Amino acid sequence: MSNKTSLVAVLGAIAIPVASAYFVVQLWGSASTSSADMGSPTMSAEAVKARIQPVGVSKASEPVAPGARTGEQVYTAICATCHATGAAGAPKVGDNAGWAARISKGWAALMTSATKGLNAMPARGGAPDLTDDEVGRAVAYMANKSGGSFAEPKVAGAAADAVAKVDPATKGKEIYGQMCAACHATGAAGAPKMGDKAAWAPRIGKGMDALVASGIKGLNAMPPKGGYSGSDAEFAAAVEYMTAASK
Ligand code: HEC
Ligand code: HEC
Image (cartoon, rainbow, N blue to C red; front, side, top):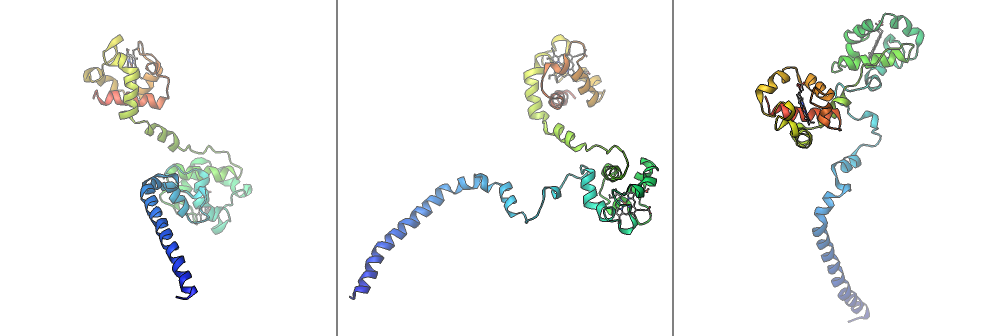
């Protein structure tokens, strides 16, 4: 055996057990931690999605619920093609002189042009999925930057979402148990009992909005919001829970 061969043999004798011990530790470690890794923040759907996002995607281009786009979002996505540049003879945003005669036609006339189209201006700017309110917001956005002063139709989405998030079957039930049952489970103080269809029918007949509104204000022995101090949306969820069981 030459010196060189014996050196290789000695190194091998040391390296192989060390290497296998390393792999055993690696395997063991990954097996015992793999489930924890999947739950870690870096593996969450959002985090993964964020990492695989193409470079250059901005917040502004995130999908917005249809119907809930602001005037600026609609303008940027659709109307700017012509109205930022004057393409096809479109009045440019910021060109007050170009807009003055149009603005003086009034809101209704502008809305008719924008939704139905006018010469080279396509109906809804060529985006048929825009709601009337979205078109209106874009019209107000553009006109107001060009000498006009129109009220931009409100985005109802935010408020509607907040109401929808309060679930009558869970949060409504919880509030009922804490606040409303004291009177509405027993009929105390003359309260219509939960589940008493005859007592609830004329009240439900007023419509949910009216019912919630009168509950918020209070009615005779019914204190405002039944004494509940949370949001109107939460109170509405409790009303919904109670009436659903009384129809
Ligand atoms: C393809 C180009 C194009 C796009 C896209 C476009 N417009 Fe126009 N728009 C025009 C042109 C051209 C006119 C001028 C029409 C005329 O007076 O003959 C015009 C005029 C208007 C007017 C004035 C109408 C009037 O009665 O004087 C409004 C309001 C308007 N556009 C709103 C919008 C809105 C809102 C959008 C986006 C949703 C939009 N436009 C997208 C081309 C466009
Ligand atoms: C102190 C007793 C009391 C409590 C607590 C109470 N209510 Fe009432 N509630 C009443 C009485 C009494 C009426 C009947 C009022 C009337 O018609 O004169 C009533 C009526 C109502 C009505 C019908 C209003 C209408 O226009 O007919 C609703 C809705 C209602 N309560 C919801 C609630 C909810 C939700 C809660 C809990 C967050 C609650 N109440 C807690 C006593 C109470």
